[in-house]
Amino acid sequence: KMSQKYVEIYLNQLDLVPYLTGATMPKLNQGKLSEIPVPLPPPEELNHIVQEAEDCLRTIAGLSRLAERQQARTLALLMSLWDGGTRA
Image 1: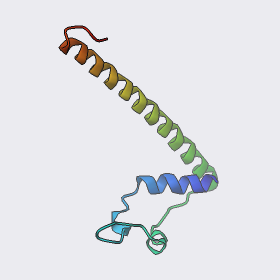
Image 2 (image 1 turned 90 degrees about the vertical axis):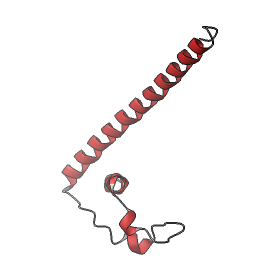
Image 3 (image 1 turned 180 degrees about the vertical axis):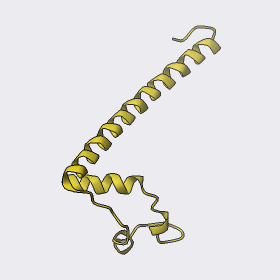
């Protein structure tokens, strides 16, 4: 399971364009997927990498939600100012 998560994290950060086929609708087929080299560290290091990556991804998700809320607040404030203070 942990190595599966490692491969998922690794592939999500990788530029897959060289492995895509199809001009109109790019796709990643099984043959091309098997050509992608995935470096596998020792199990204890792999677990550490996955834990650190998941921590970072959780932080990024939290910051993204915070940025969306701040953007909504800013938009509400601007609308309030444009409407002469009738909105909050």
